[in-house]
Amino acid sequence: MSLSINGLVLKRADGVRLLGPLSLNLAPGDRLGLVGESGSGKSLLAHALFGALPKGVLQAEGSFRVFGIGLDGTRSKHNLTWGGRLAWVPQDPLAALHPMLSLREHLALLPGLQRREPPETALGRLSPLLERLRLPADRAFLDRFPHQISGGQRQRVCLAMALSCDPELLVLDEPTTALDPLVQRDFLDLMLGLQKERGLGYLWITHDLAVASQVCDRLLVLYGGELLEAGPARALLATPRHPYTHRLLEAARHQPSTESGFLPAPQDRAEGCPFQPRCPRRQNACGSWGPWRGDPDHGLRCERPLEGTGQP
Image 1: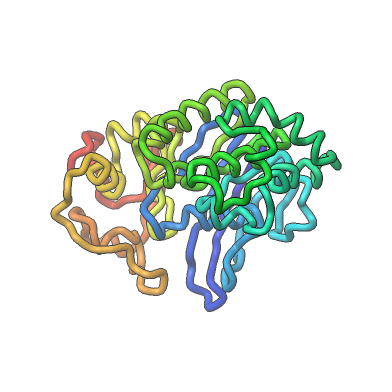
Image 2: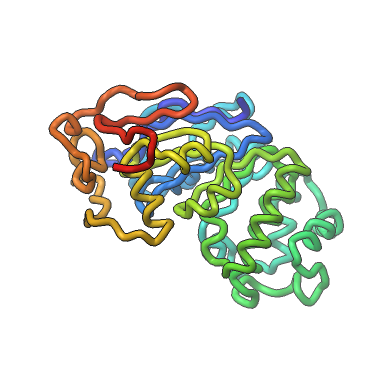
C-alpha cells in the first residue's frame, strides 16, 4: 500500500487522547472516505500526515508511511513527499492561501520546490489544468490575491496547487463545504473524472454522507476520535450496523432523532464506546470496548449492533 497508517494515536500535551488508535491503507486508484460529525478527529488525521498539527497536539503512538517513507511530522525532512506524491486540499481555502501572495505565486510554489521549475514554465504546463478547473489562465486573473476571488475559485486554486506536481495520492478535507449545490455537483464530477484519468488515490474527509456516497468506494466512520464502523460505501450506507452510522444517515435524510446531545469534549468522554451517552441501544456492556465485530470487509465495534436492517 502506498499510504499505510498503523495504530496512530494523537494526544494533547496533557495526555488526553484526541484520535485513535486508527489504521488504514490507501493505494493509487482507491477512493476512501473518512466520515463523522465535526469534532470527531477527521481533520486531525490530515494535519498529522502533513506535519501541521495544532499547538499542544503530539503524535503519541503508531506510525504512517507513504511510499515506504516513514513520516515523523518533520516537514523539511519529507518535503519531496509532501506536495509531490502525496498532496492535500485543506478545509479552509482562504486560510490555506497566503494573503500576500498572488495566485500566480501560489500556483508556481510547489513546482518550484518539487521540480525546480521556473514559474512561467510551471504556469504554462498547468494551463490545461486551470482550464479544466474553470479557472482563467490570463494575467489579469493570475495577478489577483486570494481575497479578490470567490470562495469556489479559492477552492479550485487549492485543488490546482495540490495537482500541480501530479500526485498519486490526494487528501481532500471537506472540499465541498464552501460550494453552492450547482458548483458542488460540477466539482464532484470533475474529481471523479480526474481520479479515473490519473489513477489518483483519494482520502476524502467529509461530514456529508451524500457526498461520500458519490465519491467513495469504502467508508470509515469516526466518532469521538474512535473508529466505530468500516465497510464498502454502498453496503454501509444501505445497512448500517453501528447506531451512530444510523444516526448520521438520519441526519442526512433530515429525519430528526429522538436522542439529543452533543459530542463531548475529549477530556469528558466516557470509558468504552464514545457514543454511548447518546445511543438509544446503550447498555452496561458499552462501558468497555468489545472486540471488532463482523467480517474483514464490513466490521464495527459495538456491543449491540443493528441487525443489518438499518433499524434500531
